[in-house]
Length: 448
Image (tube, rainbow, N blue to C red; front, top):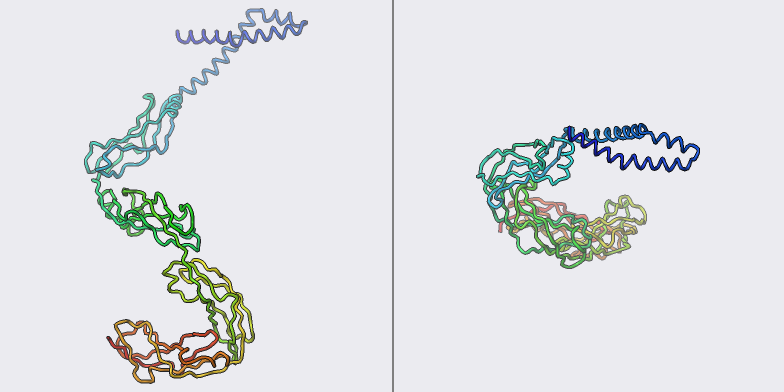
């Protein structure tokens, strides 16, 4: 009661000083401006009852305002702190912990004023001390170190079952994977990636390390500071552990967890002829007299291994039932493994002429795709040579000689014994049709 009495006494003094006196002075000033009504207002204000009622009214208003604030801050309420980090204390060099949640939700219950101060203050870590526990399964309590003792709290979850494993380590060979390779300039190729060491140490529980199939360094092309021919140093290449299915294995410590790499970028290229391949037969009695190209050569870009096997860039032209000269606008298809080409479109002009036939005889048969452990023998002399009918315009086929025609047998998959195999002929000149007069020959395959 004494505290309440002092509170209202001090409140009255404050109201009298800060509100009543200034208002009275204001009213007196106003009354001086109005001479006629000034005396009546002065007389009314001079009454002690008037000032008493004004002061009482203001005191009641102030009391209600303060009382509402006191009630607001004195009522109990609850606040939920979501995903609060859990700090675990243990020997990280010797053990691995499983089963402990990384975050918890904390519900705080108390007066709103206390909750307000609790949220503004540092939360204090939620610590779980496992330093005295040995390897095995344990149940531990998760507690919140509250700032204000006047606040009750509930942690969800409040209990966790943790498993402590001895930490083991293994040495693994590091491989490299290139990410976002399509973002590299199409004319450039990553020739090599050099690192200081291809060995890393992985640490963790023994049953987790047994799932690690490979450890890879992820070289991200997007992180290259520049894209040009030369050697570029790449910092902080991330390392990841993967299982047999290509999934990332968690709870594995990799030492080191990042490496530096030197990326060697080159731009291999090769100039190749463009080879026109007619598809279908032109109209009866006609043959292709000439084939003209807007570009006869193309520069292709790709890896050195791919370029080494390329001899030409083919482009197919549909000439089925063609009766007259025609011009085609065609797109060049990039061979497999080629990243870019200097020419992507060509114009092909086909000129026709009258077709004639010519037989070329005495062509020796070649043997292709035969296993190196075998040798081939013709059953008879007729099975070692063939005749080929060539069809085309006279100016073209008259210049074809025996050595210009290549007949062969594809012996892929054939083994010991006698076989009858179809004769094939290389389409050396796109303007000419090559038809073997002998369709099949008999051969004997023997082991060397």
